[in-house]
Image 1 (tube, one colour):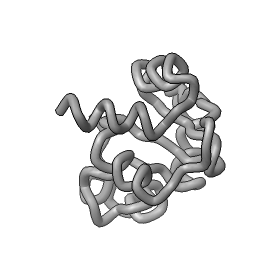
Image 2 (tube, rainbow, N blue to C red; image 1 turned 180 degrees about the vertical axis):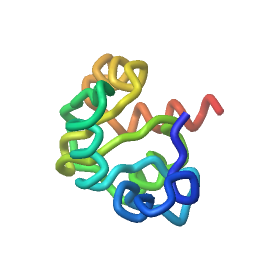
Image 3 (cartoon, one colour; image 1 turned 30 degrees about the vertical axis):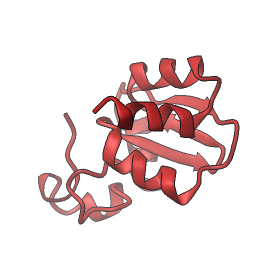
Length: 105
């Protein structure tokens, strides 16, 4: 769907947290603000049970297929409705959700 880096010449380094990794869809504050102001795309806020740990940061980069933004270490904004619903069904338990995604790949 959306690809960072080379597909967005001139803005990739401003919109994507890791513009070198073409698989990473983590948005920066600038990218998140641009999407909110200039598009009809919706990012869904999910309140997490625990703060995001480094392991989950790596899993998010590998496993999420649509853009996301880490608002705080305990609030995650995801563009995918499926991810938002599944995280809500998991009660905001990000480690369990990501481990289940990883196990089913």
